[in-house]
Image 1 (cartoon, rainbow, N blue to C red):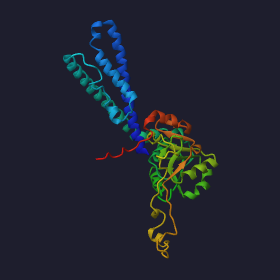
Image 2 (image 1 turned 90 degrees about the vertical axis):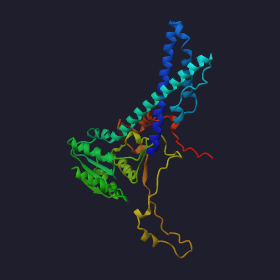
Image 3 (image 1 turned 135 degrees about the horizontal axis):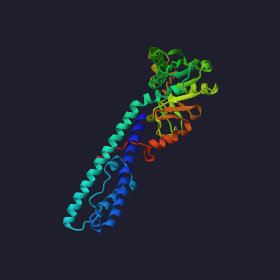
Image 4 (image 1 turned 180 degrees about the horizontal axis):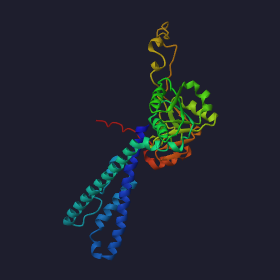
Length: 347
């Protein structure tokens, strides 16, 4: 999902830069018409360029957009009729120069915007961590599950601001990523307690806040997170404990959980739960198919509905789940919600 989000962000950037150039061209056309009213001699020299610009702006808004059309949406040689052979030659050169200049300008602006996007993704952990002192207070108990770099930097940033608190880390079976996070927290000097996943409900009454990471944040404010977090969210709701999700803006997904394009889960190898040697003992060799009597299901993710989430903390600040739709409208275009692979052409 994160890869699809980046593709949609890039498409949105190209659309925005193309629209900005088209708007600037139309504004320049308006200024040119005012100047033509003041100087009749110049008015005969500018209609060709102005008409070409208007044609490009019209095509950029009317025809179906794509990466190719957005980067190469410039007037063609047949957009304006020729008045004479010599005039046609100069007109063609003018339009060719305009096409080259506009294409270079668009590519330059797109590359600059993409560099800013890369910088935002690279620094999102630091930007989220800077907000830690506003949410974690003295002598609080924080609960988390699994391993997340964003959560690690967030907690360590609060520790560096002289906040004294304790962290409960659920181990996150069967991958036990919580063991890695607990070791990292101890290395950074935080008071840490490692608990089993089944002990979350027993320990939640001692907790002041739940802070977790996310795999993706859906358009309705729901969260796709490591398996086991839905149980933690239900326990937090039962005991009125705030459930806070840390996620960079690149993890905001414009799709809804019910969209067929969304793969909410993936099943990992059963060997993480049961050794293959033990699993073979459960095979029924009495029948010809040797079908297993035991089935092992090992999902990777959980879905946490928005009603269980108290707050999202992103690199742009804190937001309620009901505000996620507005952030998505700023980052994505409606035309790019469904990204499909182009079918191969017949040779």
